Length: 134
Image 1 (cartoon, one colour):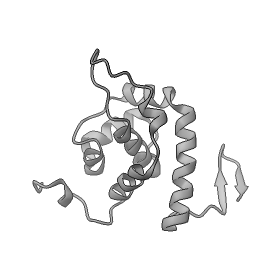
Image 2 (tube, helix red, strand yellow; image 1 turned 90 degrees about the vertical axis):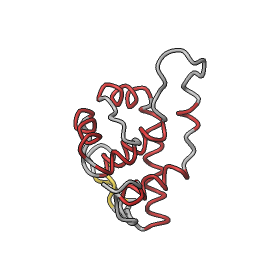
Image 3 (cartoon, one colour; image 1 turned 180 degrees about the vertical axis):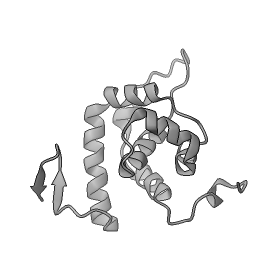
Image 4 (spheres, one colour; image 1 turned 90 degrees about the horizontal axis):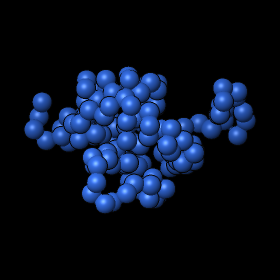
């Protein structure tokens, strides 16, 4: 592996796009839910967990156990998590704890990808498995 993480993936890889999108989102709803009293184990940065979820979900990986495994053997996930393996139970708790905020965030991401990059076609969107017109 090259020593510089920037050389691990090509410049147009989806991983870099996801990280760029995360930098443009307002994640204050996630940040305010963590205490800062230096007690307990430090939490993973919410930006990294959200980026990991967005990346894996976009590749069709939704199981927290499969995402945990991807943190071990997928270079993109290792880039996103700064080479840390996020435990499946941590991922599941994060999704459960922030379910409402994640739903709103994913809608923002879809709109951003459609509007700015033409990556998503909103002509047919399925919220619960039922296709809907935009």
